[in-house]
Image (cartoon, rainbow, N blue to C red; front, side):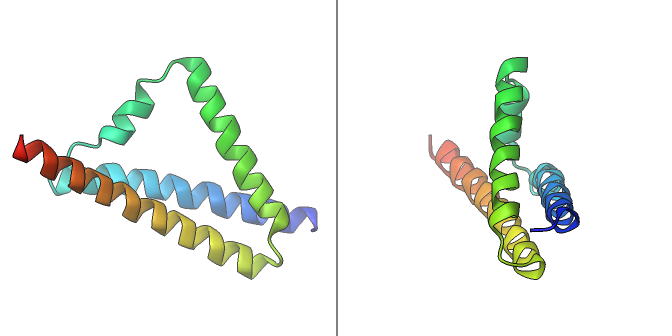
Length: 102
């Protein structure tokens, strides 16, 4: 894969996951949920944050390298980001439902 295609895919991945995190926190607040996953990651120590960033960066970089083409890579990254947002919101809704029952 060419270097410019790699950087394009890596940039799309970084932007899409930054948008997902922002939407997750904002949407959680709008619908009255508490973004517990974001709070959990915010409470990490410096080394845990570094290791989390290192692992996620390595995974996104590896995914960008093995993408068969740029359009397929962009589509896969966007679908993964949308799925991550849906999973986060579903987790928060289920957690809120079980907290309300208690």
